[in-house]
Image (cartoon, rainbow, N blue to C red; front, side, top):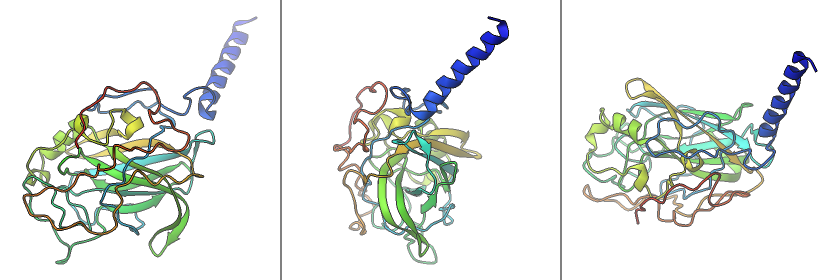
Length: 312
């Protein structure tokens, strides 16, 4: 056998192995086996189809968010691009086109649109209004995935509120359609939360306008929803810096044939007004009963991370 024959044979073997990874052949082919420390800046680039268990949607979800890429509505903060790649996990982790990705988050001071009475805790100015009224849509929005499976949003790095590390809420819908400026119908296939590294949050919160919110914030190791599992539990890969802005990415695998709206915590009406010294309820009341996505084990892919303290 000549050297060229050996080279060609080796190339074919490597090509077959790569095809096996893409097609989901073998144990764990569609998931990452890596685990990350809470303050890791980047997740591995090798992740193909992270299998994230659904979690509580929290008390701050509102129906009929606008269909748009830029969700800031003039809210000030460190620029953040959120780029979520959606894959069809039961079907070889194929890139999923036309999935509707919905995100919502708090502003730089910890307030959520539509809930002006829910104080974020600590010391902070009152929620800023638009044209003299409280907006019910800032930092909320829908986008559908393209042929590359990607939905992208322009937003700001989220602030914090008592009991929670910085995070962004997310739902992935399929089977519906864009109607009256929002997304209607279909089913919710995955409800998750996207987390950001502590180190990036430290840099962001040292800058205006975040510095106007003072108090003790929760770090990832003590968040009641994040389980310490890196990308498998929603920790995003983050590039950039606090001076120029960040890009945060994550790949998730869903089952578009199954409904999985998340573990409790739903609310579609404003919370009772809170005094300036009170705290907003952490959106983790139902986090103890985490609902895995269809076909996903509750422990997720890879080795289990060490247990971390939980906020009641």
